[in-house]
Image 1: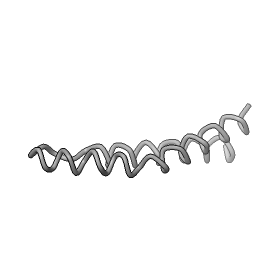
Image 2: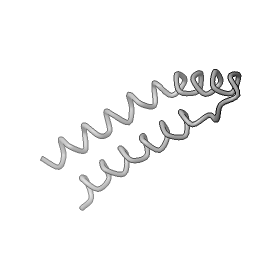
Image 3: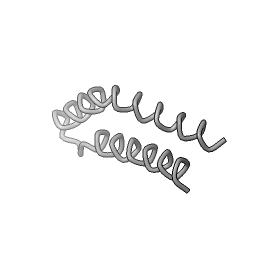
Image 4: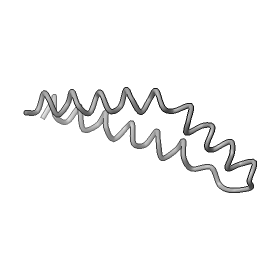
Length: 60
C-alpha cells in the first residue's frame, strides 16, 4: 500500500499548493484586522508534511 499512500500524499500536497492563495488572502485580512498572520505558515508546513510522508512511503 506504500505506493498508493504516497500517491495520496502527493495529491494532497498538490491540492494544498493550489489553495495557497486563499491562505495568503486570509493572512492579508488578518493583518488588516491587526491580528498575527499564521494561515500561510501553517498551510506551507502542512504541504511539507504531506511531501515528507510521500517520500517516506516511496523510500523506506
